[in-house]
Image (cartoon, rainbow, N blue to C red; front, side, top):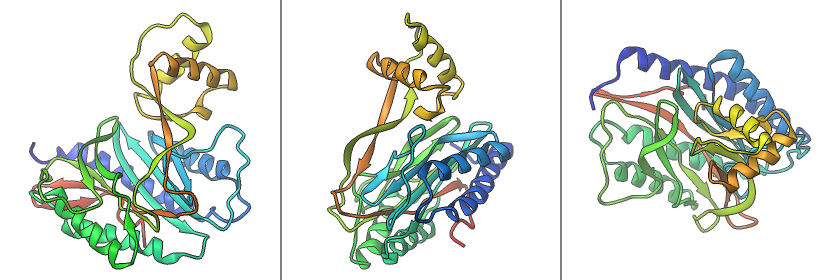
Length: 297
C-alpha cells in the first residue's frame, strides 16, 4: 500500500485539528437542561465554519445508546444525569477524522476512564505490521481490569476518502488470527465500554441515512430530496439536514425504495451504560500518527 502522499496526510491532519477544536468546545456545552439539538447544531456549524464539512452527523448517545443517535428536527430532548457519548466526524477534501469522547453526568467516572485508558493502550500497541487482534486484546485487558465489558459487536474501522467506514475492522477484544495494519491506512480506533452484557442491538429510532443507489425516481418530492442528498458526497447525513419536514417524508419513500438506507440507533440492555473513546491514526512506514492528538488533554 505504501506510505501517505504528504498532501493527503496534511488533509487528514487538518481534519483532525478541526475536530479536536470543535470537540473541546462542544463537550463544554453538555450539561443538564441543555438540549441535544443545541449541542449537535453548535458542533456541526463549527465544523462548517472551520473546515470542508461533516463526515457524518454529530452522534449524541445517552446511557445505553452506543452509536447512530442524533437529534430529530426541532428535538427538545435535554440532558439529565446521564452518560453522554459525543462522536464527531470531519473531512477536509474528503479525508476524514473521526473521534469520540464521553461526558459523565451520571456519577460513573470509572466507565469513562476505562474507555480512555483502553484507547491509550490501543494507540501504544498500534503500528505497521501489528495484527488488529493484538490491539483488541489490549483494549479488552484494560476494560476487564476496570471490571467492565467491551462491546464485542462494535469495532474500530478504516477511513478512506469520502468513506467513513472501511476495512480494517479493529475489534474491542483479542482475536488470535487477524489482518495486520499497513502503511497508508487511516484507522479510527474506538473502544466501547459497558456495565452490561457487551452486545448492542438495533433500536427503533433511525435518524441517520446514507445514499446507496443513485437512480431516478418518479415522485416529485422524492426527486427534490434526492437532489439535496447527492450534495452530501455519499457521506451519512441526518434527516434534519434536509430542507423541510416534507423532505423527511420523501426520505422515508427513498428508504422504502432501497435508494437510501438508514442506521438504527445501536443500544445495550435497558438500564445499562456505554462509554466510548476514539482517535483517528495514520499508519506510517515508521510508526503511527494520531491526527486527533490532544483530544483528552
